[in-house]
Amino acid sequence: HVQLVESGGGMVQAGGSARLSCAASGLTVSTYCMAWFRQTPGKEREGVAGIDFDGSASYADSVKGRFTIRKDNDTNTLYLQMNGLKTEDTAMYYCAAGRCPDTNDYWGQGTQVTVS
Image 1 (cartoon, rainbow, N blue to C red):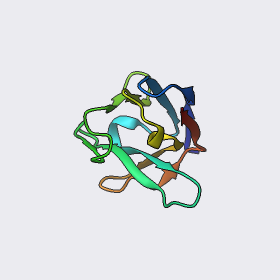
Image 2: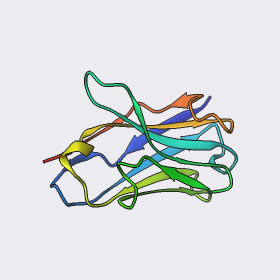
Image 3: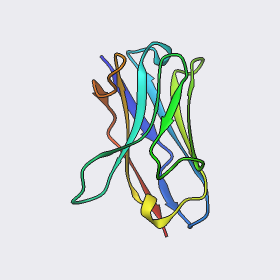
Image 4: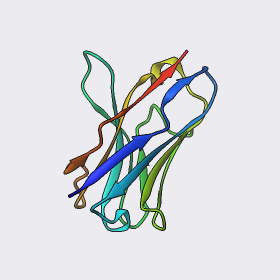
């Protein structure tokens, strides 16, 4: 049974930083493609950052240079380090995993990030 559990959301001041975590069970993050998505009310879910099984990362243009995605194979956890946060980064953030190249086989429940 696969579970992805996000944590680390909350309220952050503009210009500040936050780190999201996604603890995985039932799968090994080192062998899956994983990603962070976000969604705001009334908008479609959008991809924020993705990381392949070999550690290659990609980012949405809106977060390049500010966000960093990484996997910790020892703790089986996915992270999203978010720096220089802007009010437009306010959203529900979701962790996702899939058999490469897909990243949408499994989803977490989401964690809210609010930037003010």
